[in-house]
Image (cartoon, rainbow, N blue to C red; front, side):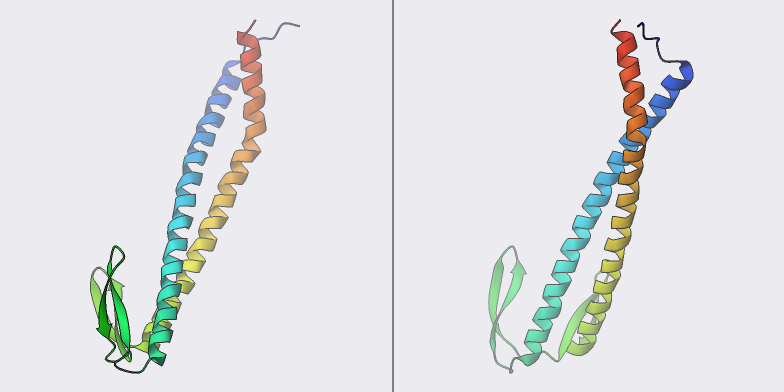
Length: 150
């Protein structure tokens, strides 16, 4: 049996499918990175809420370690945990009560959890689309390879 080369329409379809799959794979990688970044933000926010809740229970003058960054801390004495500074973004800080700060951070957590779910949904759609077009692309590739090997 002699295999015929791909028709022009088939070759164009194969090129479109391969381009769509490549674009889809790039988007999948981007969405996975986004989910990972959001998960890191969630983890940090949850730790901050936990720390605020713990600080609220500590009496004034409790010895604490204040992080400076890069695993470097300075010892300090807690004066009060009733008022805290909360970052709003763009280097803007606002003073809030510990309870207000916790509620604010919990609202931010809910927003990020929603963004994670939306991103995961989009990721699934892209992955499903790639899997849906893969069989047709593979079939055309086999046909193209069979025709060129003769």
